[in-house]
Structures are given as structure tokens and as C-alpha cells.
Image 1 (tube, rainbow, N blue to C red):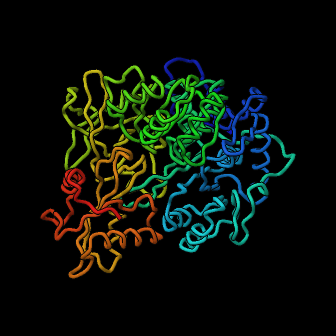
Image 2: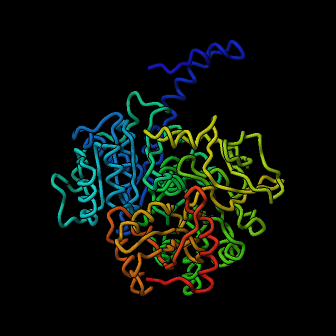
Amino acid sequence: MTFIDEAATRDRNTDYDPSAFRRVFETAFTYAGAVERNTHRYANRTAIVDGTSGRRWTYRELGEVTGGLVAGLAGRGAGVGDIVAYQLMNRPEFAFLYVAAQGLRAVSSPMNFRLAPAETGHILRRARPAVFVYEGAASADVRAAIALAGFTPPTLAYVGEDADPLPGAVPFDELVVPGAPSFRAPEGGSVWDETSRLYTSGTTGMPKAVPLTSLNEVLTAHDVIMQFPLGPTDRTMNMSPWFHRGGNYCAGPNTAFYVGAEVVTLPQFDPEVVLDAVERDGLTYVIGAPTNLERLADAQEARARDLSSLSGIVTMGAPLERAAALRYQRVLTPRIANGYGTTEAFWNTYLRPEDLPGAAGAAGRATIDDDVAVVNVYADRVADPSDTVAKDGASIGEVIMRSVKSGYAYVDDAEEQAKKFHDGWLYPGDLATWDEDEIVTVIGRKDDMVISGGENVHPVQVEEVLAGHADVADSVVTGAPDPEWGEVVVAYVVPRAGRLSDPVAAARELDRFCRDSVSLARFKRPRLYRFVSELPYTATGKKQHFVMKEQAAKDVQEGAFTRP
């Protein structure tokens, strides 16, 4: 196989021929190649620990189980270019599938386990995976999702107990062939192969597919290794789900298996479990959202543990406020850092521990290999990357980034792709300022997305569900400030005449309705309601979410909302 670009050969600046180097780079510098090296380079070191059972796998054993999984999936018909989808919590099987898919030269595709059946069905219908592995406890939702998708993946497997398995579904262990060859990078693989397909939410609220190449995997790992810094002797625990780009790729399996570190799984966040693990297992890094740190600090103040093994705590998903940062540095560890980014390009700015508390609330400077700019915003076009706002910490523009960690595409979504990617730059829709030191502070979003506990909630999707209730005439969904979750989803509802007259009973009824919806994940439902007679619209008939967002902040302070 050859990857030599004739144009690049023709445009060389000297007579040196880099063809031999390019062959090595493009075929041996893959993520799968890195994992294969570590199965013998660090054969006797621990690769992953099941935080629930305490079971450990060395890198040699990681090679054995993922090699067996490659053989098992291949035996069931999965191969080059196929989608290996899985909807799992942070558990060893997630990590095994992530690696094994690359050994098949297939595409690893983790899915949010919090999705509603209609959202899962949307992904299954569009991706048509060859393999789908799910939580046994979620079989009822998976059954509904497959019915809505009108498509059944050829290979179905579940992890954990499943009292009512789907037809044809097998326990995960049956996918692994005992005694198969250890994990190997696949024949014919290259750094340009699509190796992962992640999902984010678009303007419709339904997930968008984000492709990543093997080179994206490698360069993301490199970025984290340098930023933390992370080495083979580190032990990490993610408090955020691995299906997030900021989970698996932020010192989760992606980074840890690349550098030879140890990962300890945490299926569900519990501050007591995390703190006990730091003290007992000598964890060096824990990673999560600021909401996780708030609960860690509460638990540590209630019952102190020895956290001296920590080299740092890294957060993503929301900025750190000054008072919170000071508290976390005092109670947990002085080494607090914060990253800002997207599913499409991972993190692109990084706020280092040395930047705190002075720059608390900011997103930090551009990461090592990235270019970041804050550009002017126009109604009819996107700004050129050179058309920047003043570096005065006050002028507001859109933050954009150019990163080797991005695949610069959405799968089968040319319209959204054209909106977000321009000439090698990503325009994510966030508004920000920057100062003379190029420290970026994100102040809001061009759209109206609510970010609650690090999760994106699009108001239109929630409004569409509420509109399905017979007693609802209209609604606006937005976010209100919340000390624990950053933002909480709130709904302003216009009832139909003579309906929903009792606010308490009405809030409970709408909460039940949202919980029962197959189109809305439960974490997206409103937590507070206010019943009003009218809502603000523009002259062209568009809802003015920003008006209600401002109102929501006041209404929270005044206690004007009703909680279900």
C-alpha cells in the first residue's frame, strides 16, 4: 500500500525524498499500533481496573482480551469499515470495544447511555452498526429504540444482567474468543482511517455524527499527555462518562492506553467512591465537570481523606468561578486545571493551575498544537480568522479554533458541516473575549443551548415534547443559573384556556409527561416551571430565548418558579 502524494513530492524544498518516513508515519503511527506496543512494552503493568469488582487487567491481558474480541467480532461478520456501536457506562467492556474496533479496522462508536429511545433509534437507523452492545439493565429502552429505528444490528450483546434479553442478544463474554492471538494493529491500516464516530447534538436536538481518524486519536492523546502531564506511572479516574470526547479522551482509555498508564473505572459518579479510591489506590488524576468537584469538596469537608497522591484534578464542561476555584484548591488539591472545547475538536484552550485563581472563570490559552482566535460576529457571514476583536478582555466575538484533533466533518450532514467548518477552522457558536495574553473567557452561546452538568440540552427539542401535551399552548425552554449544575433547564408554559390552572399540579403533570416521553432523555426535562399568558417573539415570528434566559435568572432569585 502506498500513500505518497505526488503533489507533496513535486513541491519538496530540497532533493531529500521523505517517502520512507511517510510510509512509516502513515502505517505505524496509528493508535492501534501504540496499543500493540504497550501490550509487550508494559506487559506486566496494570492497564485497567474495574472500580466496582476490583478486577485488574495488565497490558498483556488487555492484549489478550481485545485480541479475543477482534476474533469474536470478525467471526460474527464484523470487519473493515463497519460500525461497532456501544451504549455503556464507564466499565472495562467499553475500553475493550474501543480498542478491538480498531484492531478490526472498523469504527468505534460509543453512544450516550442517557439518550431517549427515539434518539438512540435515530443513531441506529442512520449508522446501521454491525455490532451493538448495551447495558443489560437498559434492555427495555434498547428494545424500544430498535423498534423505532426499524433496524436490528446483526450482532447484539449486553453487559451485566438482562432479565429479558433481546432476541439474538448474547452476553458480552460470548463475543470473546479464548486463546485467540493478542491484539495487533490491523493489516492495511493507516493514520487516515476513520477509527471513531462520536455523537453530539445539532440545531434540531438530534445527535450529529463526528468522525475521527486514527491520527486524530494519536494527536489527542499527545495533547493530554503534554498538558497534564501524564506518564506510564499515573492512575486516572474519569468522573464524566467516557462517551463524551472529554471522557475517553481526557486521560480515559484513549490517553492512558497510549502512554501506558492505568485507568480505574467509575460506572456512576459518587463522591465518596472517588475520594476513597484516591486514598486507597493512590490515584494521580481525577477528571470531571465542575459539578463533580463541588460534590467532592462537600464530601471531603464532611470526612477528610488523604489526597496527597493527586497530581491534579482536571475539569471540562464549564468555567471555574473564582470562589469555587479557591475552595477546590484548598479542600482538594492546589493543582486544578480546566479545559474548554467541543466534541468536534476536543479541548482547544487550557487553564493551568498556575493561572488560578487570577484567571478563574476564563477558559485559558490555546493548547499546544492549536490556533485559537476571537473574531467579529456578522449577521450575514462568518468572520475571517484574521478579523479579530480587540484583545482587551471586554470586546465580544466568536471564539474559533484550528486543531489537528478535529476530523472537520459531520457524517451525512453537509448542511451542518458547512455551518461549522470554514477553511480549516471550527466555528462552534460560542461567544467570548480575550485579553493581551490571549486568555479566552467564554461568556455565552450564539445559539440557545442549555448546559446542565456538562450535558447539552437544546430548548427546541424539549419544547417539541411539551407541545405534545394537550393542555400546552406554547412554551419557551431555557436555562437558569444553578450553583450545582451550572444551569438547570426551566420552562415557561402558556396553558390552553382553562387548563393547568393549579401550578403545582400542572408542574407535576408536565414532569410526568416528559419522563414518559420516548423522545426526550430524562436529564433534559425541565426542573422548574412558570406558567405565563404570553411569550416574546420577534417580528418574524421567532421565539426570543435570550429574553427568557434573562428573565429566568431573575425568577430563580425571586422564587417565581414551581418545582414538580
